[in-house]
Image 1 (tube, rainbow, N blue to C red):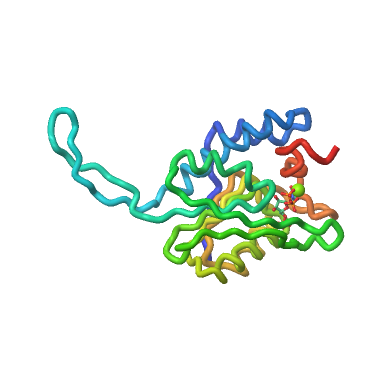
Image 2 (tube, rainbow, N blue to C red; image 1 turned 90 degrees about the vertical axis):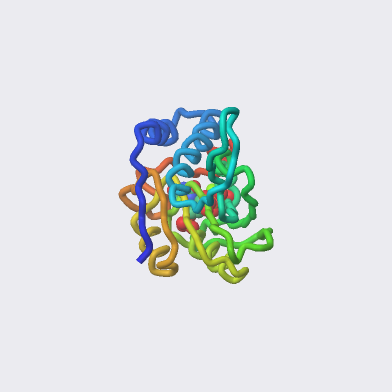
Length: 209
Ligand SMILES: O=P(O)(O)OC[C@H]1O[C@H](OP(=O)(O)OP(=O)(O)O)[C@H](O)[C@@H]1O
Ligand SMILES: O=c1cc[nH]c(=O)[nH]1
Ligand SMILES: [Mg+2]
């Protein structure tokens, strides 16, 4: 079974509180999502492989380290886009793929509308980012799609997960590590996470009225 990490950090608790609050503007929301994503990235990248390299300080030769793995970050559009900058600030060499998916409001099933996956993904560490893991349908389908492109090593990074989404993702893809800032109570009749933060995409981009 995959590992599930709930990142416990005081700044993340503060950020999540601001994201949940109704009165937070979309400008503030976007900035806070990026900051929270950076804190999550710090934890998600904890086991990144590094290799020793010889370097010279101004005083003498010594041994340094460089990242020894290919990294691919894949946001699930739209809302996942809000997490990319926070994530890649630690790994500027990462490639970024894009997967466009939108939940059908009636069926709650994800509908694919875009895919652009970088080559060489077979050997890469793939970090799929999306603020919300609700039913899990979007995450499950995204990872099926990436596996069909040859990807093998995954971490799914989100801000808020519902227990239903965690179960669905773990059942469909037991090999995928999940990193989240919070696990909420559950889904409502519209498959929205409660207490949640509302529609993440609309709140990041200022859409939805
Ligand atoms: O776990 P699920 O039940 O699949 O729900 C989660 C998905 O719903 C939201 O995207 P949405 O479909 O609202 O698209 P958007 O990012 O364009 O707003 C969210 O960003 C996830 O991708
Ligand atoms: O609570 C939810 C569920 C799906 N998508 C969101 O943006 N929020
Ligand atoms: Mg949305």
